[in-house]
Image 1: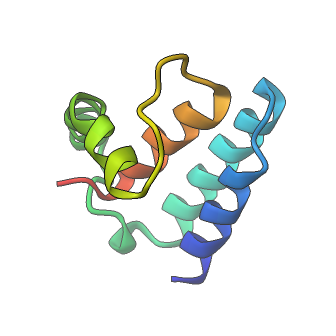
Image 2 (image 1 turned 90 degrees about the horizontal axis):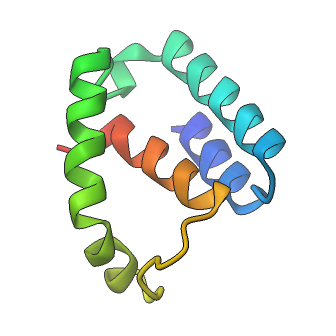
Length: 88
């Protein structure tokens, strides 16, 4: 649970491709440290979840009081990656 909070906190700081690369590294470490905490620990399941989350991401942003993404940023991609960890 603690690493998930850290990942969410790290997303808030993503403003560059270097920040995103650091986030991807942290995500990989999270998977290695706690694969049971991942709903989608295999590449196939992760990519399937990513596809489905991208298709419905406007609803996520709407439900969290954020505008839909019209011009994705490095942070948007981090949101997609983190959601893919758990999206069913």
